[in-house]
Length: 122
Image (cartoon, rainbow, N blue to C red; front, side):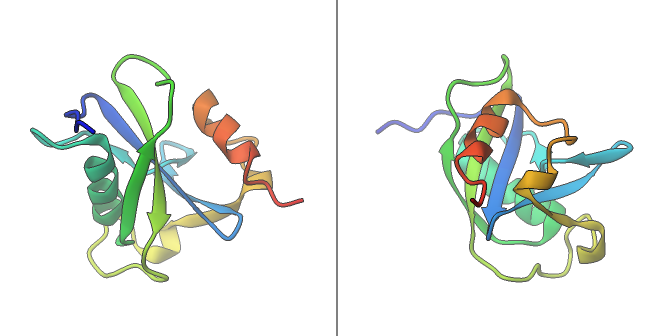
């Protein structure tokens, strides 16, 4: 297994108990996202970005394939903490755990939308 340096925008997909973690983005909601640091993998960048933005600890487990567009990667992350630590860019009350079924109006990349379809509760 080789580790590839990440480039462009990294979007973190954090799903827990049938809900998707969303952060304020413009006039709506979006996935926690940011850019990788030099020599950082996409999975490491996703975990760091989620912590910096929300205070939640996650483990970036796998980039979704194929990539949405040049310079953008979505990474599935596993939640490691039930509550966020202090210091995230957004306070906990500004975060949203949206039921997957209620994210239809949220602008999400097609690959993320397809991934979420497999996690929609029946």
